[in-house]
Image (cartoon, rainbow, N blue to C red):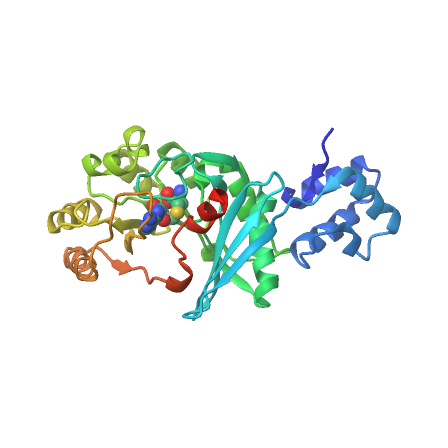
Length: 344
Ligand code: SAH
């Protein structure tokens, strides 16, 4: 039998586990606080647990986490990029972004991705495996320790499709939110999805306060299917309906992400068509100047084009922002540090 990964368990589950070890309940709470409040990564450091119990835990349990392999720090704006190794040798990336309002970590949910978006580096070799909740938490905790400052927000925008790893991602959100742990407000968490309709309906029922971001990247199915294979099984009309339902159930505004690719999705007509579909819904569009990926054919739209596109959307009553590019000198471009490492 494999060891029990205590890093991904909630307090109630830890209590059951301690019961099977013949240990009192309050020990579970102590362990939980070591893992999620003090955030230590070995049982040896849990000094208020009796030596005997620590030895028993070494034998029966493990703390699933990540190991730092490489770190790049931007001289321009302090953005940090981390390359982390998982137990099985897979590597993932996480990014720290420093804003006026706090420190945000971009978390990976899978090593690689199987969604196949044509402009994205993470999906080039498919998915290696999904991450556990503990491995997602370890990205946040490790960066917090390395930075020496509190991490106040997360965006699930690293490699992987969060809704393709649904249970572990929900576990991650709840553990990160736990008052006996990091105690991060759900409103400071953003889950980004390529638009898996069935899972969006499921997520709406969880009644979370997180922000749902949906990668739209096109005003219609014709263009969307060219760049996002998932659009075939998840037609835009139904996707937008699921988003309207999500907003109605949670009272939370949807963010639509739109990576601007020259000559593909950035014309005035595209802006007008998009505005027509989104107007009168509880939403906000975030235009992303696309990050060029070596292996991909797409180039980014000019700044002027992005500005114009934003203007047209706003004119038609759709609230729009342009995502600021951070860490340009360390190539924070999604997934490319990981690829460089894998090709070595
Ligand atoms: N699987 C999730 C999270 C992916 S990463 C999703 O699809 O939403 C977060 C965002 O970065 C997504 O909107 C994704 O489409 C976008 N993205 C991926 N590659 C990009 C690139 N080369 N340039 C700009 N944005 C990109």
